[in-house]
Image (tube, rainbow, N blue to C red):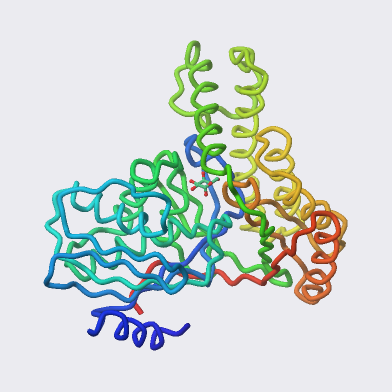
Length: 384
Ligand code: GLA
């Protein structure tokens, strides 16, 4: 779908011209998983796939939500607040308008037509993409002048309070502020960030979609969030820390007995070690040491599998294959887990061979078909 086709479809559906066309990418997280809500540092980058929006304000005080990918539509009169209605896709943009209204903005109505090429619910931040896209387009068309950082914070609030997922800031921040050919190194406690060069040289960044539905994902995600809160609470009885990631590995080891429940202790151990791996991965990236970077990806996956328990058979099968494939230097699940996508770094010349062998291996072991595609790092939300 090109911008021109989206505009044409907008005209067909709303019998008017759009005022603007916008794009927001998805993201992969290179390393630093399940630590953004523990004050850790994460290293994501945006990808070239994402969500598109053609939009225009209207004079009849109505929000009209339509999508090329989903049949459900909604047409809602502008009112002072909204609540989530069922599980339909339009709750994400609706939540954004709700939040803008809560912030005191006076909003006119708006006609919105979405499209996208991100697999939905596959861990590539389709929800952050549509939230940030809606807030960005609203800010542009209504002259609200909201900064990219504030757009990210608003979108996170939508996800936490309107949608009901206790996610951290990583996804929204990344798609609002990502840069082409760069990875973002974001401290999720202070929001201090920098861009790291992400030029993979002879390696190709590969995304592998397990195509495994993530049915329990939201509740399991919230469960991990709550477990980290309990582990932190136990440590705080003796230590003056604000977040789990305030501890380095040595101080965690010294104090881990404060957490009595072995499950909670394992969760906290993942968080603390993963945060340390982000530090090591930063050095590896800065020195283009792909072998070390790759080893850290494998170690991250192992920790997410054994300590944090968010991987599952499908993701583990992919990583098992990657470990044995000689031209793959590293791989791991990316995003929330429980299915969804994995990433791998594979020698460019071996990409086709890797993809075909992996698909066969995966199908045989799991019965699912995997999608394997080469990823290019994208930019940030923008008007096109
Ligand atoms: C989801 C959440 C993020 C982050 C990751 C796990 O993508 O939206 O905030 O917690 O899971 O790292």
